[in-house]
Amino acid sequence: MKKAILTITLMLLTALSIPVPYARAVRVKDIVTLEGARSNQLVGYGLVIGLSGTGDKSGTEFTLQSLVNMLQRMGVNVDKDKVNVKNVAAVIVTAQLSPFDRVGTKLDVLISSIGDAKSLAGGTLLMTPLKGANGKVYAVAQGPLSIGGFNVATGGGSVQKNHTTVARIPEGAMIERNIGSNTFNRDYFVLNLKNPDITTATRLSKAINIKFGRVISKPQNMTSIKIDIPKDYERKKVTLLSLIEEIDVVPDMVARIIMDERTGTVVIGENVRVSTVAISHGNLSITISTREIVSQPQPLSEGVTVVTEQVQVAAVEESGKLITVPESVTIRDLVRSLNAIGVSPRDMIAVFQAMKAAGAIQAELVIM
Image 1 (cartoon, one colour):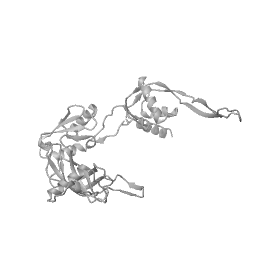
Image 2 (image 1 turned 60 degrees about the horizontal axis):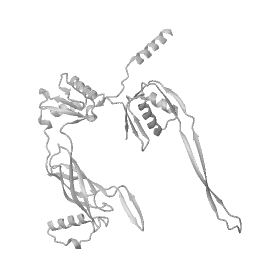
Image 3 (image 1 turned 180 degrees about the vertical axis):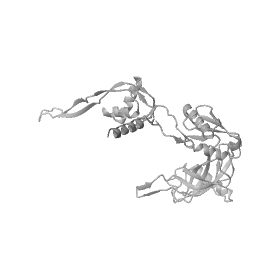
Image 4 (image 1 turned 180 degrees about the horizontal axis):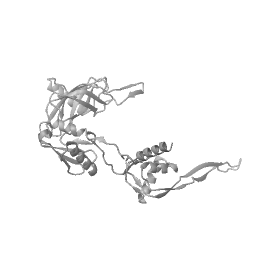
């Protein structure tokens, strides 16, 4: 019996001595981006036709001018002053183009009304060139719109589902020009952290070197990690990137508390630490009520009716609680201590600000 108890005790001590990781490891591909592999924004101006009387009003100058210009390019000469249509809407078309997309690849496009159209339901986008920041055309969009909603109005009432002046066309644009990228033409790669941190960059560089058994990477700053391509991977650069993306690394986080005063949302980071401090919390409620008192004159007294106001002020203060928060090791201790004195999320914002001013909280406060 004593032997069994001793065995169990040793097992418990062994389990307690095992270090517990303070954060879980994540894949490299989830925390970095490859330099030179960013998306490029495309934008274009176009017309949506086929609307059932829900397009731009006839007084919309740019819509009429665009419609007349289009008809003239098709050999139809019309007088702009005589054009009166409600089934056409002017729109802006946007898309994202990857540097590795090639000619013939299709892109999803987003169509947004810029006039006073009521709905784009049932419309068709006419051929719209999509240009990059340099003014060159990289894709052409066209096709029927999908809005996933409706807008019905009759007899002074209306029913609407979703936003009917914004639509999408899945695979609605065809790429006509390649952007090109020299990412795979160099003898090195550069990985950029989505959340810059010098400790995370150092850990990532060490993890890559351990993975390949040699020094092929080094952090350049708190954002970038440069990776020299080994000679045995010069013709297998994609494979090299794939192996790097699968590496697990523990990202470091700055001690930070995010507070949104509009919604009362409070998000506390894992590394927040609190020094020993005493906190008192209580609410003061003041109620002011006004009552009108009417004084009527006696009959046949030729008096005047007098109205006076009686103001009553009442103040109620909740009994505050003073507690001592010891030096905290984990965020759980801080939350438990604040809940013990009944602090609401909105009140936590004031409490954290006061603790920061007192020098008792070791974290960055971000107020949204």
